[in-house]
Image 1 (cartoon, rainbow, N blue to C red):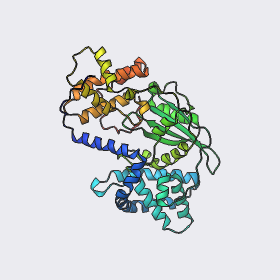
Image 2: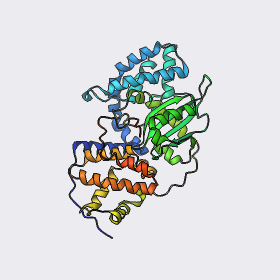
Image 3: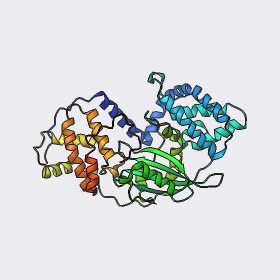
Image 4: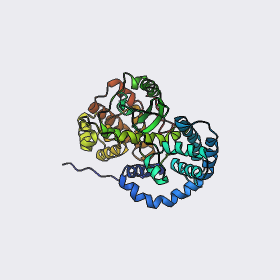
Length: 393
């Protein structure tokens, strides 16, 4: 068995160190054990940040108490009001302490619970209705059971890494509303880049197709869920480290509700998992090395095996069954990560990235025109665009 030639790793930049820390946090967040292990150590921090949110929660409570709305209309107003407040809090100097969605929700719940009257009870009930179970339990709130009122459907773009999931939910007022999760799995972790209620599946699909773009979304239609494991990887879950600090007001406004409704979907009986072939992640770095040596038209780098290990590390992995997908957005994100995190090997890694994407496209059967669009993004700089923006492919 050949032995990799070890080289001295290039020193990582400050951005790389932050990215490593972010990836470690995401991995810990995905583990149920992490919630138990971190809960006690973060309790004091949570209390302090909730206190920082109280003045903002009090102002928000006053506005909501004056609203004449009830039921789902009040829930919608609450979500629309939470977004701008959270976005403004995210823009405050970091030395003032991070105040995230859970801290503001806790402060708002405390403010409303301390008030008397029907209006305060009405707004508190609307708040409880949008919160996910872990936060409800922590705040000792009860919410009416929200059940899925029909079949959950999904679709994905032609690259296989941008998903739409839709589920119908009944309302006290009568009509069923359809909740859409627009889920982008192109960066390190699958992320809801847009979530909202729509009047019908057709309306939701049209909105999603427009956001994805005609090339990537062409020919897509709703179909039945056929892989509960992938659905679980895609849908958002409550997190100890909540917002990333780059969300829009719209994304922050739906932060809690999209997770609460996802809980209802994930409680449904699992479907039979679709038969999925092994990914490049399963095959390992040796498979790509063999492919490269068989096809390369340039001299082999002395440290090829280590460069390949870096590529595996830079490629999104938190939805393992999607590892072989290589959309333009995913390629652009990986190329940006390489530029930010590797000081001495950027040129070699970016050159190898072209081969890597070509190999993945061969494995996944990506069409040639789509592969060309992906390869073209290796040299693209996204500039100041948010990493969780809705990207038109």
